[in-house]
Amino acid sequence: MKSGENYFQYLSWVMCIQKRTTLINYTGIFILVMTGLTACKQNHDNGNRAPFSGTPVEYPVSDVRLNEASGIADSKANPGYLWVEQDSGNPPDLTLLQHNGTVLKSIHLANAVNRDWEDMVLAAGPTAGKQYLYIAETGDNLLQYEDYAIYRLEEPAAATDTVQQVDRIAFLYPDGSHNAEAILVDPDTKDIYIITKTDLHSKLFRLKYPYSTIGMNTVEEVGTLPYNYAVSAAISPNGSELVIKTYENIYAYPRAAGETIVQTLGKKYSSLPYQVEPQGEAIVFDNNDSGYYTLSEKGLATSVKLYFYKRIK
Image 1 (cartoon, rainbow, N blue to C red):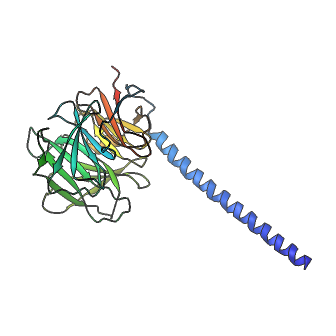
Image 2: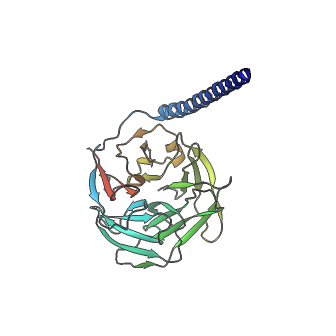
Image 3: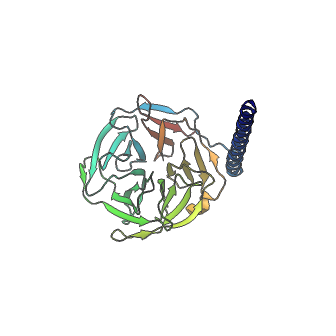
């Protein structure tokens, strides 16, 4: 009986050693992978820091209902205001938020659905001389959807209550479902770029202009980034800077005249100042090119704040 007990004690000791060895092996693999990803990012970071203030100006948002911001755009039709969209579960509305955090009003989009809105861009469109809002209906946390869309509408004036004319640019990925939370519109070509969030490395897909507003479009994969969790993107007013925002960083890329988005994102980047927010998913340059705004979902915070990072001249 005693020898049996010794045998089982020995067996338990061997199993314990095996478990510890397995744990060490998995831990080593994890560290190796993470080190590789970090090294990959470091190889792309040029180490330069753009001339923006490291301490943002804070503006408390006046309306508690604006608590799930997922995209912002600086209005040209209504100077001094930002357009704000909210995440899934909210109505298909856009809110005008003053640069000081005061909410003016919300405008309803007829014939639109907020399945999972994730980013917004103000850019040129089909009619020369007019500005259009592009809303990314591209979120898919569970990878359950077959198709996605970009809503496009002519930028409304503040007096508008409901926008009746809203184009729906539907599209498919060539390789199945993706969760994407960042978009860009090339100011030269009007091509739309969709940047995925939760792939091992964020993928870059292009929706080439002109795109159909009545049929289904197919995007093409044109690149990857050396990081993931891209949640928003923006181009500076003069087109010379492009930024990609993640939850913890803002990566800035210099952009030369006539350069494509793919060429720009293939360059080395620098990191911009960023005060990490509860769930920051929105960034935009000020139309005067005097800095950039970020806005977060409320998350576990007690309130929502609009942040502005001034450009240092």
